[in-house]
Image (cartoon, rainbow, N blue to C red; front, side, top):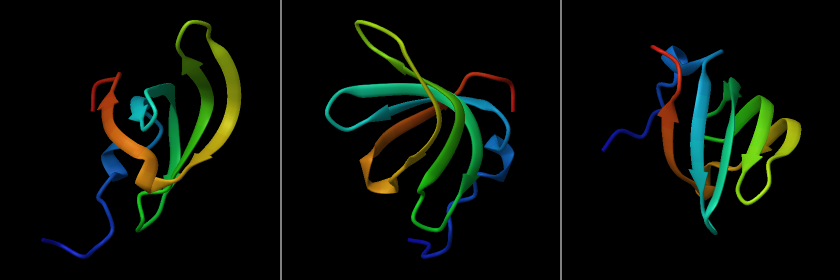
Length: 73
């Protein structure tokens, strides 16, 4: 298994759907990431019973369950 940083370059500036632990779900534009898969998302909206505009957020890598690109890569 590779010990390097995740290769998310092709996802930069693309809208992503991200499932988080505790059944949370957010959609936002990827602006940055690091070796621990901590993510910086802009224009972020929390999905659920109600939608909440969060703006720019940092998501810790250990809380990410899955990611999906909503735009063509």
